[in-house]
Length: 129
Image (cartoon, rainbow, N blue to C red; front, top):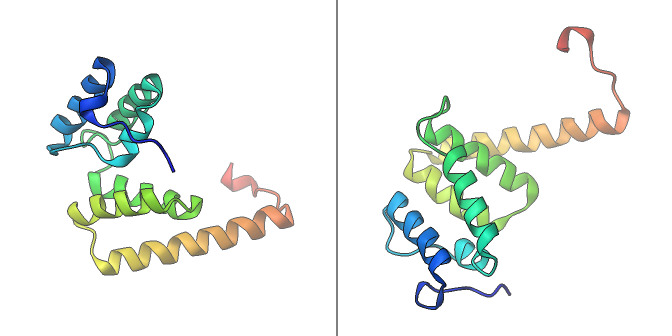
């Protein structure tokens, strides 16, 4: 089980990141993922800065699409924590049960066909290059 660093026990560098997370996300506290990363402040800061940039609502993709993509990768990687966290964020952004079901069908199909193409060593068609 990961060690979790609480705000009251955190050093100033970690507290600054925690404050940015809670302010940016309008939350009373950071979730356990960030508390676990806080055992290594540099990793905490780097990960938060990258996530904040990638998941920004100002990009070409809307927040729901970003959360659903994050969910798809999390399912494929088998990360229950990320499925729970980003599933909640996707529902908050408007993902319906029907959208969740369709997303899971796409993830399953992509994983199946990816493995078939990889296993068979199918050469890439010229028109796809």
